[in-house]
Image 1 (cartoon, rainbow, N blue to C red):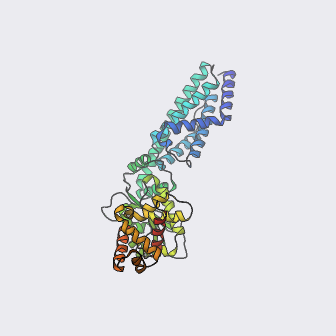
Image 2: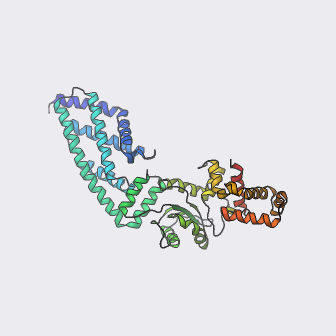
Image 3: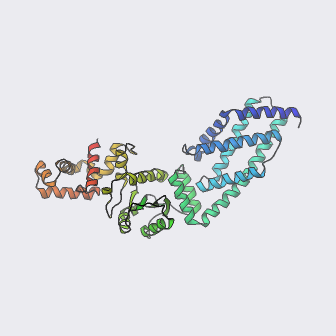
Length: 392
């Protein structure tokens, strides 16, 4: 290779490396053309940009020098593949992202060197084909090895999966399904995300054994989907079948624990469910916790509303708390609830509605049965009061 082609390639390389729009164009193309990447949230894009910048620099260097990928490059590619296998991004999508990036790079070079010598164009083609072939082989091998390691330790793999769900690392239900399939498991759907902690002033970091013990206590043969457990600081975090929420209060009460069970979020929003539950435990007053009962979606949304950072619109919060009471056919129960809260007692509310006191108390029991909220309990009465107040 003569010095003139080298100089021409080097000039193009310097132009491209110095232009931040090229990396942005690669990331944008990958984001648009590869569905798995299109669903990534903003927290994952910096990593994609960093890998794109590194890959761009290395490929241009190989083109200028007629070089080949080095052992350090291969180690980095294997590390990227292992990370993608762990977070559930399919290897086919990862390899397609590299092909899309190579196409963008080719277009950027062509735009800057329209009269590129034939030798330079052939060198670019040869370098890209060789590099893509090498990285495909290295990444596929590393991906398969990581898959085998994860599947060999199923409990650890499930815990890592739950950790990734909590951190919001799964961008779509499709990616989550792919990872679950590779592990040979089916996650519960609908599910219950239970965040729980022992009652007491001291809150040391929780041992994983305590979380798995709670998981075993809540597991019931025949439940649909595979449950898993992990820890976050002083709390256990459990992913359970949705039906487990009904028995969570009893199990936690027997252990002198308290918790919050979220059942209304989809599998791709486990991170949202965890944040709701954790914030609810942080902010709920002591009287919100009762033996045999856990905080629910409705409690968590009311607490978020009170804290000034609602995760749901007021009308949705009202529906969560009031449930069937919002039906027109239950208007008499809403009237009884309103009168009871405003008057302060069943007897006074009965007089307002011109009812016998026993009739009013019967309606309060019906409210409790329909909403799982006892208007006589201070915390539950507050949630009912807030819901009926903000209800459109």
